[in-house]
Image (cartoon, rainbow, N blue to C red; front, side, top):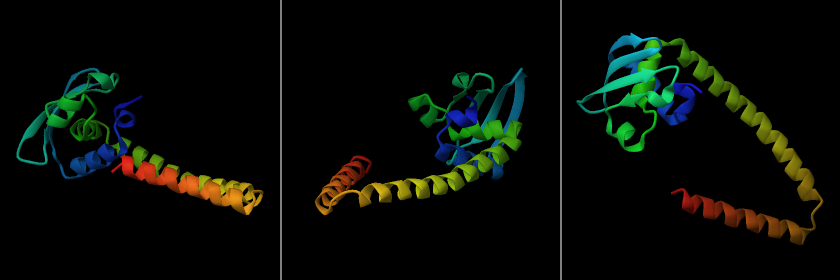
Length: 144
């Protein structure tokens, strides 16, 4: 799994913006598939980034988010895009395909649920709907 695949999608979208806004100040190769970079933060600070394309777990950034959470951050992904700008198009194409497929999957699942629901009595249907609402409300409250 690569740097882009290890990062949350929200981080990748922000990294694309950083790359497009030229926030990657400088990039230097320091070995095979390894680079250091200076990337501007959202404030005035620049962050020191190290990316290892072959071993994403070895990537580091001096930003608070990456240091506190030990994760891939937008600065690392933006630095990666500086070295491999075609990866942006690949990511955007994958996202487009996923959402197109998601709509298709949604419609198929909806049809299956309608077939299932038609087999239930009115009371069973009301019970199932009430359980779904309770579960949805529980999920919503949990993810506030």
